[in-house]
Image (cartoon, rainbow, N blue to C red; front, side):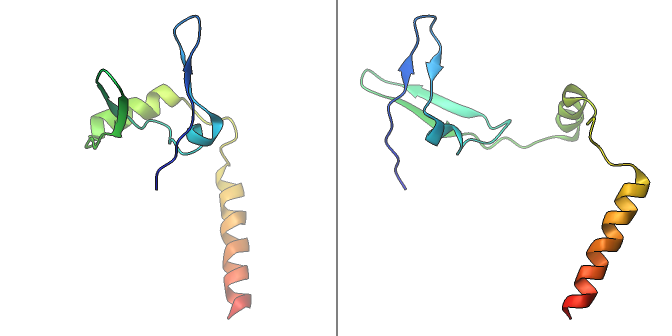
Length: 88
């Protein structure tokens, strides 16, 4: 599927990408950028994520202030199990 939109470079040199394109991009995705005289092409890279790199990303992200505690997780599990059993 091809999508064509207009992106522009601001006065301070930043690239403004239209919202309809931004919503298709995923966090932490890296792109290879190829530049020719007439076009700039972004291609998603395929990088193997190592355990070390994953740990580094988790550390950078920090803790989740909304992370449920064990009691809340247990309650969620009970509710899901109950829903699954009533559907059968």
